[in-house]
Length: 185
Length: 211
Image (cartoon, rainbow over all chains, first blue to last red; front, side, top):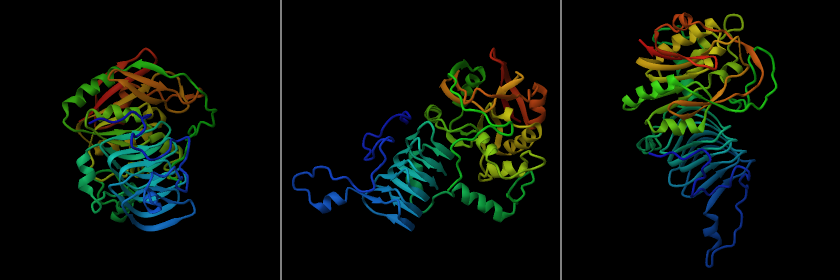
């Protein structure tokens, strides 16, 4: 089990480096001979900064999120990038998940999860390789067991920290074994 | 989403100017002992009370650990729940470590964070740690015996199993609580000192064990 150094770049990352934020619109590189417009459009999709989506996202192409998403992002076979402007309150399933913006939820990456310097995650990361760049903000747990990422699938995601907190509040502190646990302010 | 503050300034002791201070490498005898213990465990759960450091995550990955990162100082600096006086109470700490009740840690990396707690806070936090640690769990802590400590906790990077890189975040200082050895175990009830090492640069390292 090998985790890459924090300054490593994913070899297959479709995203630009931290110094060059992802562009909202897909660039138009010189198309390969014979490549149709529709083929090029399926390379990756972008949710722009002014877009707010509430619900589940799924599909079979890479995704860049620069807007706001609440719900679930389920692209297990593809790369998901939360751009610097992206604000996601959802569990994210992807092959490689790169976070440059803010995520409040769990991240499940089949290959690698990368938290860039500008990024923040509050939630749990499950991935065989995890990179936290210096300066990034993280609160939660990191589990490197690759089988967990598959096992959780899209139906058994563990609770986010916020969900755990809310569940505890609903329980009225009954689960606390010893010390008093008053409702949090 | 404003659950993260980019920088958490000094707590209570007034503002300080962020100053670049050269990182220093120091030997860590307690850390070396801790890793010896970790190697014996098959898969352990580690609670890191410092800030997220990528190289530490990478280093700890070799042990097959599940790592929880909860920055205690950042939470204290941005807290809204206030207990007695200006101190953080049990409610604050319960909210800070909002984990499933069956969570049990094998290792707690407290680094220098305990120096930034008042005695009552340390007692309250120790009680919570005791509940979340399985018997035999190890707690690594550094306690200053100098009168002054950095105004903000250091950022620690594990260089190897016996060396730590101290990245001081500010040149400003604040008074040290100077917890005496007996106070440490008196306030952290349920823990006993397994090993302690007095280091040359004014720090006593502790490896405590949950009884």
